[in-house]
Length: 344
Image (cartoon, rainbow, N blue to C red; front, side, top):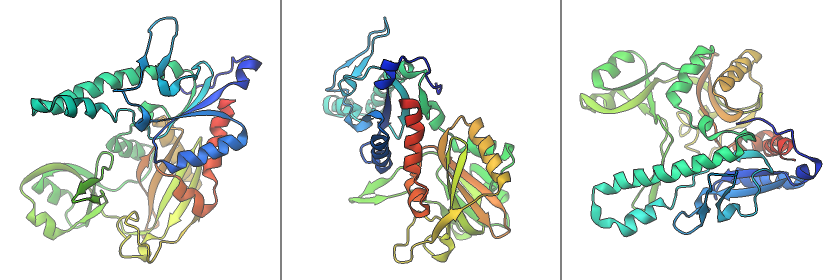
């Protein structure tokens, strides 16, 4: 996956297209499509929410290279797809309909049945990717499914400074690992909001105070803890095909955003300006992204009060509009140009 096709006839090139696998609410997808239209590229968008395995016809014939995965891709000749943009595509949203509407009497087995059915349809989805195996991918599903812990380890190996990081379920180990320094905690996997009484609660980075640690039981759920880095400002960068577009976020100007700028202070918005990372840091980020097999992604760093650049994480499908618009980088155009180059 990831190679540009170069064996099209002139007729086939005229009908080549970009396949966009996205989600309904993603605003970046809409902006990139606007630019694809401007560039004259043919495209087809499929949102994961639109695929209903309980209603849409799915047909795969494993012979003679036949492909018509679902009615939403009707009319798409997979031979003409030259570029695929995997943008927050989740195509398993309707599976629960079968489980909870027809099998509500099986109690505790619901979770197991859900896991089984998701795995069954997941294998079908994975097989469909094979039909686009020689296309240019931005990025492949396997590459975008990063492990935050593995990324930190890889970042350290390429020479990027990372915070002291510990995953533990023991109070004594936590205290011993961070003796004499402040601690923060954050989720290890993807963030998932939870609803309680019609209110959405999001996952944010949070300070772990000594008083809170004192209240912890001796054993708790395995959690990630890091040394709290005192920062001058935060840096959000967007990486695309070896080029880094960075922005400095002066999150320390507001008490509300000091720990996590995503806890936006709309009454005192953080100043955001274009920023150029040192060439040595850019080279290490390039090395990291190549090792992760990622062609694009959002990168979080900190500039510490000691003038060190500290790497935090990579989000392969992070929202890049928040870097694009304040800095006039026109990243949506650059993504569209990248896809268009391989989609004509």
